[in-house]
Image (tube, rainbow, N blue to C red; front, side, top):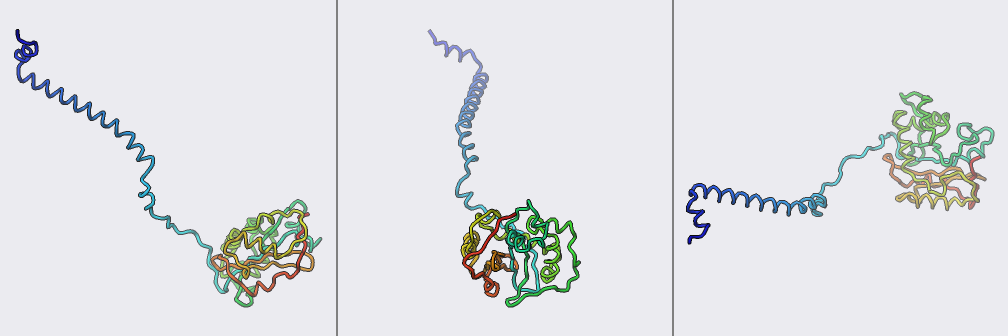
Length: 261
């Protein structure tokens, strides 16, 4: 007796058999393709989440230019003079500027000035096409680093006028210079402290400012109080040596560094 499969094949037209075989083959290929894609998908995601180290290592460095300080002219370098505000207030007493020394104004180091210097000596009170007075609104914008608006105008007339800069650019450089110099943490607040050795304060500034050298800083004093820290900077606000300024270093072994009143 013939087998059922043989009977099925005999009774079915050859063309129909060929179509069924082709359809079965297409279905099989589709299933295999689907399974293969499912197997590769996690690998593809992993590659996207963790790019090849060799590729990231070859990325180009960021070469975008950084903004530079406005360039002054007619002098050799700057001295940034940072005054210990409570010393000024104590020394001047009733004559002290009230914007800086009134009760409840706890200033520590503030800007006395940014002074253009020659290698020997310095210019002052230079002729300029800029206004002699600093607008009050502009001076107030500096109140966090120069509390006295009168001092702002005085420093512009005596020192800023000799930089070849506009008022706006000069005070922009003043702020950048302040940001360039780090105040040591122990001396940021005008709190009570024992007598201070100026050399210890100088060393604290050297430690807080990598690149600053002993020949580029001077700590000044009077007969009683520590008064200023003077830091020498190039025109583009890098640290540099300044033997002439260094000679103003305080020679006393201990001085008062009073707290704010």
